[in-house]
Every structure is written in structure tokens, then in C-alpha cells.
Length: 271
Image (cartoon, rainbow, N blue to C red; front, top):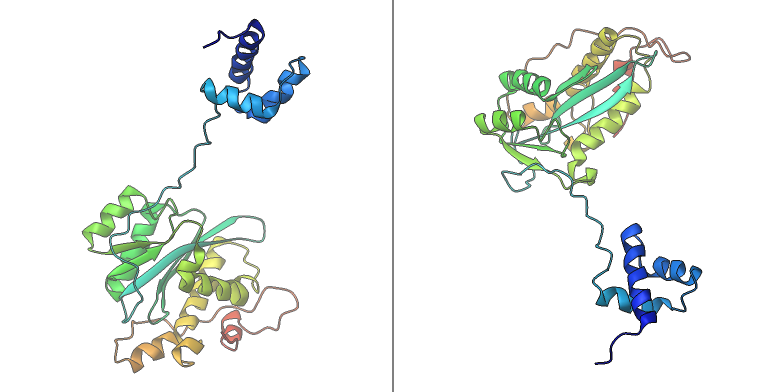
């Protein structure tokens, strides 16, 4: 084998220097740098030299989002309490205060068991809200969610395992796999959040709880044969959870809306 010429040796040395200085540059950019310094090289020659010298740019490290470990196969709910689904929805009070709401929904009857606004909700608060829902409705067999930090927290995972509730985590960046709660959030925003001016957290809790009660007891759903979730549950010979239906929200605070309650208005909307 012929020994390398001094010109080639100088080129390879400079190639190493540029590759160390610009570790994320590919052969095309290194070739431009070399030609700018007077080296008569083409990009194919630089590519071949870099490969021979082991100077290929390593591929970028692919980001792998954290995922919760599903403890059961994805399933379609076929009875009440079979699959619950949960997620968060965000809004704000008039003066910009954060509102973060946890939604817990029964996928079979469409009953909303939890719809609670807070300023912040962590995994501990999630556990307390779901405990209260289980005390009223019993524990589900499965619970479906995205991979949000609150839902994959170790504290929550341990608690769910203690309750024998299996977890169903959707694929990251695939909200359509959690379609029931996404559909509810669309209607909740359209029929409540976009219609009401919520000035305080206390007012938000009253208005939103009234909406939840009306949604469960009165709002007709096309997917349930235009029955409300509770009437659908009754038709299926299922027990209806106790609900507070004698409470009404105050007049709408949003300018230009009629002085009827936001809850009673929402019952006229169609799916």
C-alpha cells in the first residue's frame, strides 16, 4: 500500500480538527469549511474520508416520552363501572387566575363523576377526588388516561394497584384514543366555560358543579338514544347515584346573554 502523501495527511489532520470543533456538522458543511481554507476537495471525498476515519456524526438521541405501564389491554366499556376515563382541562377566571379541572367520566353511561376546578391539582389531589367518586359509585375495573405526570406518578400508580384498578394509557400525542373525555371537554367548553364569566374559584366551583349535575340528569345524548346518562343507567336497570338536582346556577354573567341559567341553556344543545 502506498503511504499517504503529505497533502492527504494534512487534510486528514484538518478534518479531525474541524470535526472536533463542529461535532454536529455533517460532511457537507465540513467540505465547505475545507474549501474555504483552500483545500481542493469535494463533498463525496470528505464523506469517504470521514467514514474511513470514524468521524460520522452520531444520530441525534431520540426523545422517548415517559409512558405509564398499562396493566390491561385497551377495551371498550360494556357496562357501568367497566372503564372510567380521566383528563384535565384548563381555563381561567376573569382576572387571569388559573383554573385546572379534573374530569372523571364513565365511558359506558357517560356520567361525569368528577368535574372539580382548582388552581393546581397534583397526584395527591387526584387520589382524593377519585376516592370520593369511588365511595359514591364504586371502583371501576379500568381507568383510561394520557401520560400526564399526574397520571403516571408512582404515588398514584401504587394507590390504583391497591384498589385493583387496571390502568389503560393511550399512545403519546394521540388524544383521539381518549375520545370520550375529549368529546365531553368540547361540549363542556362550548356549553359552560365559553358562556360564563367566572370571577372567583368559589364561583367557578358552583357554576361547574351545577353544569355537571345537569349534564348527568337532564342533558340528552344522541349516543344514548337521546337519554340523559342517569336515565340511560336507569333503563339498563342500573342503580342511579344520588345527585343534587335542586340547585341552579345564577344568571349568566357574560354580557349579551339572556338571564337564564347556563345550566338550563345547555340542555337544549345537541351532541
